Amino acid sequence: MKNVFGVAIGLALAVLSVDARAQVIQGVPVVEAMTDYVAPDGLVAVEGARRIHLRCVGRGSPTVILIAGLGSWSGTWAKVQPRAAETTRVCAWDRAGFGLSDGDPKAAQTVGRTTDDLERALKAAAVNGPYVLVGHSAGAQEVLTFADRHPRAVAGIVLVDPARPHDVAREAAVGPKAAAADRAYFASESKRLRDCAAGVESGRIKAGVPAPPCFVYYPEIPAKAQAALARLDADPARLRTQASSYEEYEPNGERVVKDDRTYGDLPLIVISSGRPGLWAEEAKDEFPALQADWRDSHKALAALSRRGQWRIAEDSSHLVQLDQPRAVVDAIRDVIQAGPK
Image 1: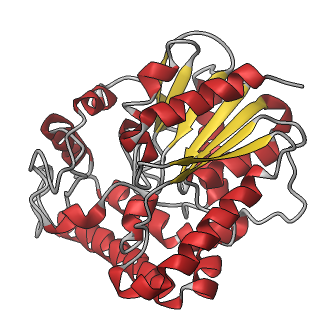
Image 2: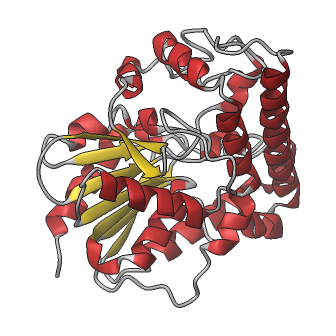
């Protein structure tokens, strides 16, 4: 749901109205392995003293780079990264202001800016290519941008229920009620986060403890990890960076438009979720058209390569990496095995 697509671009934001410390909410189980992603390591300087978090495990080549959706963090890959790392090196990273990464409040979080951060982090950590890029939802924006910039460094691509170029514009064309709800959601998240930053600075809002309305985390995240994230989010710079990410989501969908994009014979797999549920309930009559357009856009992304494949994770919500991690791991391994042609 951006409204419901908060789910589509991150992890189940319905939790915003629920005690964030609850261990299971509406059948969503805690992923205890996410605690590993708040260990204080893997921070590399990317711009002066500003740091980006990069968690790498495993050995081998190519190196798999895992990119989370909007509002999410490296821990979303906790069920995928260890399995994929059985055969090669796998790195998950946090955008500025999310996970363990420092805030970047002086710069709008455009896809160009976030991709710059990824490039800098890989260089600073001496994580060399070739790379297999794996992006969930809005993470597809960095995947496309990075692959356009560095085609010779990319050995393959996996897109997991990805956001599309022209994403909100496409949605508005077939589902105006859904698009209106999504835009309202983006605006409300931005306002909430900026209000929280101001409240922390004034002392009006108690910072550093998981609690609504400011320090609310997805139900999959264990209590220990939530507490660590809340302490980090006591920094208003992080909250303002997060707000900018929501403000830039729709513009980023236009920034990644490239009509002549092609990836030749690059191994590429696009996974679509099998269960609909990306849109606000008030747009229910628009669901069939929205779902058809969503899948058509994924087929078009797969067609960017002559060896592109489109797959459906039949029993999965938008959060394929949590619902059906094996589908993502298999796609990663299939792309690696396909190799250059």
